[in-house]
Amino acid sequence: MATLIEAPEAANRLARAIASDLSLYNEAKIKEGIENDTFFTVLADEIEEGRAHYESRVDPRLYASTNFFERALIDVILARKGHIKSKIW
Image 1 (cartoon, one colour):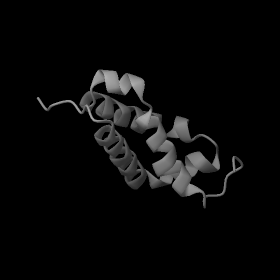
Image 2 (spheres, rainbow, N blue to C red; image 1 turned 180 degrees about the vertical axis):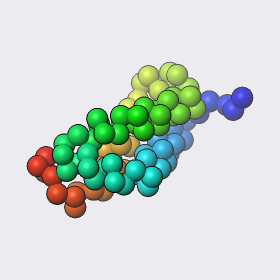
Image 3 (cartoon, rainbow, N blue to C red; image 1 turned 90 degrees about the vertical axis):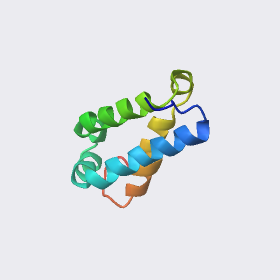
């Protein structure tokens, strides 16, 4: 069994890497979700799978006290998709 991540910087890097993978492999769903303001609904399964992977690798105390995964979804996926036409921006 792998050692759990205890360093905040490493946990943040992992969260951002998972978000990058979500972005890379789900471009069409992301575009649809942003255009229709249904991002979190359309990607619910993928986000939950990513969150479960993140949680399985990070020390529970660190996971409970940070929002790195949620922040990565915003910073890595949504903030970089500002060029997609949407009524929410």
